[in-house]
Image (cartoon, rainbow, N blue to C red):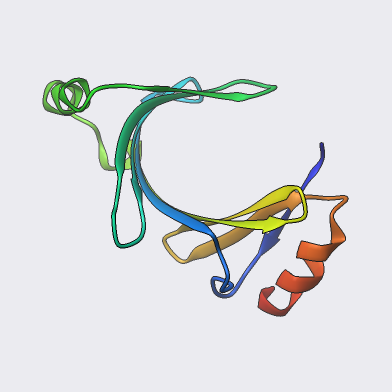
Length: 125
C-alpha cells in the first residue's frame, strides 16, 4: 500500500489514540530501543526494541529492567536520542498517523484513501 505524507501546521482534533516515544538508536537503521507512553488519564508505559526492514517494522517488548540497564551502560549521544508524539485517526478501515518531532508535524496515511486527505487539507502547511 502506497502512503502519502502531508506536512501540517497543527495537530487535527479527533484522534482516538496518542502516545509519546523516546527513541534511542542502538544501531542506525537497524535497532532502536523505545520507551512508549500512552497519552491520557491512565498512561501506560511500554519498553521495546524496534527493527525496521524493507517490508515491515518489527517490535518486541522488553522489560523495564533491561531498558534501564542499557541506558546505564551505553552513553547515548544527543544525536542518538529522538523524542516524538504520535496521534492515530481512523478513516474507514485505514489508520492515519500524525507524528510530531520538535516543530515538524507530519501526517502519514494511505494514498488511495481520499477522505483523510480532504479532512487534513485544512491543516496543511
